[in-house]
Length: 122
Image 1: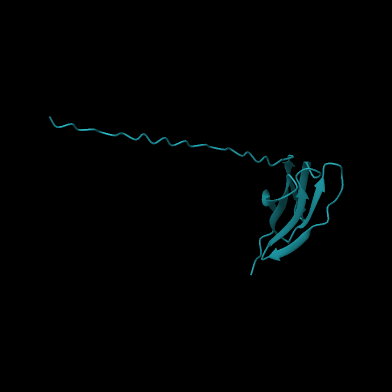
Image 2: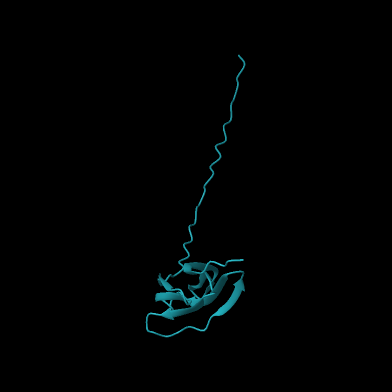
């Protein structure tokens, strides 16, 4: 049996949490790389900090995930996948997001007009 080896193919996505912490939400960054041989993955913040990620392997795909605050974690993140054949990187920019709650009050006024009809017989 012949096994074809190839350099990583990378998909890097951001998913915003529906839950908010104060007025800010979190983002989950997921980097998935498929390659043979299996690639190594790192996610680096624009400051050069290598992030601590949780990883799992599904077949020939390595998936790394990290959660960042959209306020303190805003900035560019780069996922780098590498194996003995080659490497590939993709970058995502996390922007600060605030949640604004707007309350609209609607007042409905109903006026009832009473009409009295007087009939006179002559």
